[in-house]
Length: 200
Image 1 (cartoon, rainbow, N blue to C red):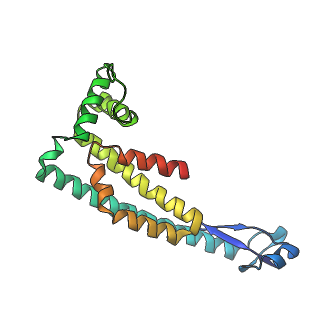
Image 2: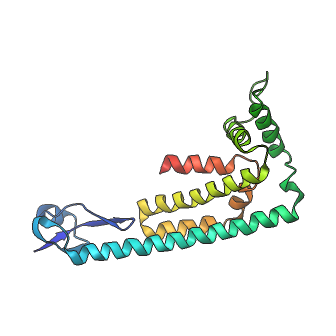
Image 3: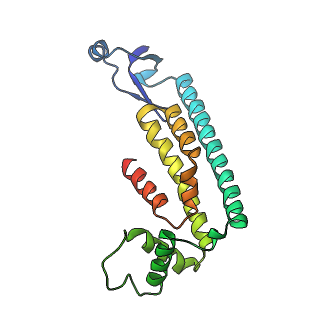
């Protein structure tokens, strides 16, 4: 039995909106699929979907590996060639000192917050667990940056499809300031993650 169905693709999953004739007449079918009993996709259709999912996963994994390699190279270069690696300045220094006070149990102090408090408290948690180590913070933020890339892909895929998500990942990977800020004691990486997480 062959059934006309309107398909929407997200990840590589196919969501069949309807297989009923009166709906199909109003919303023209995008694709004809072969179905077995009870309108279920045939074995060939299921195998094709599985192959497509494997291909998409391979593409995304390859891009994430490239992003990881780039970040490892960047952090090593930053550590070996830039004094700022161990000497935060301006806002970074402010957050660093604030986080150290929180880690010691002193809190912010008597005055109202001068800047947003979430990041320095997260930073204080890292200091509490790993000690006052900037390298650990940069690595954690780099991992969070990789997670941000994946969320960009998932959002793009959900709205426009797999290749739109891939293009979004590539565009973010090519935007230098995003990776640059991952190696600074600044709020941007965490803020981006929270923003993407709320959309996702």
